[in-house]
Image 1: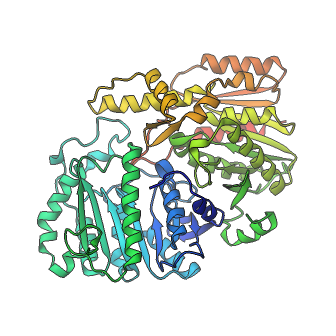
Image 2: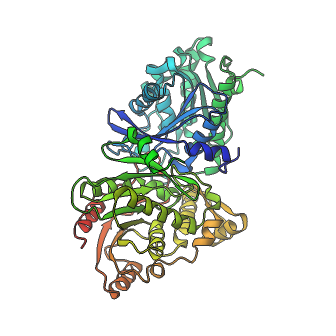
Image 3: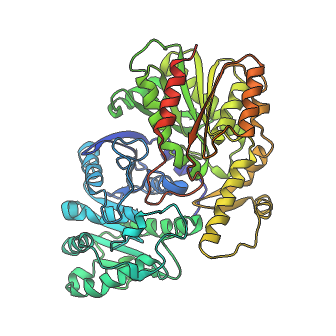
Length: 278
Length: 293
């Protein structure tokens, strides 16, 4: 992927529109990137979740313009309490995704921009947020990409996250798969939403996810299970401080969403990369 | 890009209260910004322009700019913040970015803020590296009324060294040994043109154009009212801040100092903790604004 700004992306940037979304915690500020009129319409709206909306190395900005140049409508926005959005700034609870904000975003794009089908992308907490809205909006969501989301509860993660070395280093500290995660996975399985779960083999989050795999995913019917694709990369995926790795993760998420558009009727099968049949 | 009246019309549906998020153009780059008109008060002759820091520092401090603009608008001062090219929601290629580009964007933003507000003078707020940008913009304009410095960097190289130090520190904290020093990594930046650091990249074009910047030098002709807000754990003004205050006072200008006893992790990616906020800094800035001549 070309990480430099391309001319089509620059053009998309010049058509971006700031928007204000009414959310339960106040106004949410975001940016809509309209699809390129010359591109084949994807008929999908990509919602790129992040705290703030250009968190880290502005990968969501790049992603929005890249997707828009390929025919997607895109929205990126600040969660409540972040960036320009109203609301209280809080330490996030990894098991308490900001579902209400994401739902407000989906409904805004439906009401104001006529979007009917959605793809959501999120890393870590944002991935949990993407999963959490399927329960309410599963009928309108085509696909979600969930990178390195934590399926469990880790109280110590909230203690001193800014102090390197005090984070989780022992997977056994993750005691169980949370009820919220179970509910979200069940909602995905019960819907027609295709889900890409991406982990690194060395991620603490993956150790916890293996619990979910063993106890939860094995109970799903084959037709439910086939909607969920799991990719495990060597090393770490949950390493936000590594900008090279974050680019790889973003490129994979974009490829997933983009290929989904190209073959929207293809059904996923377990273990098949992208959910696409060769 | 749409022209100003079209922009205002285009963005009308987007306003929050009176806040106006928008895009404007600088050297053919669409830049994101937000205008906050003054809610009350008589200071229609001045508009505040925030100059942000870079990379992860920009993200860490972004919410404070937003809160600062809202606070100022409530206090009767129109405010404008923006993202430079290659930053935030603006277009542009960070790899090619130079310090001159950042200053050009600041000047375009200031012109735009004046146009939106009808003000004739600028009150600059520089955040960390943004202090150098604001100082350079002041040096090439004649419409600057006052300057607030939020934990200013005094040398251009400080931003780069801080980002590298944080990267090395994280390695050590993860139990890994780094075989490189800060100087080694700066050499690598010069040789390879790009250097990954925590959450982002440093680029040689900006490093080469910023390495010799000196805040005192950039402000050598400045004699406007100035706030130095030091955000450090030390209980007294740092030597650099003391020197800068003294130099500005020597030119007959009124200065104010506020010590904020906090040390945000400027170069560290916030994972579960929120963006940095500080009520004392907002209050101090509001108080300084209200006392401007």
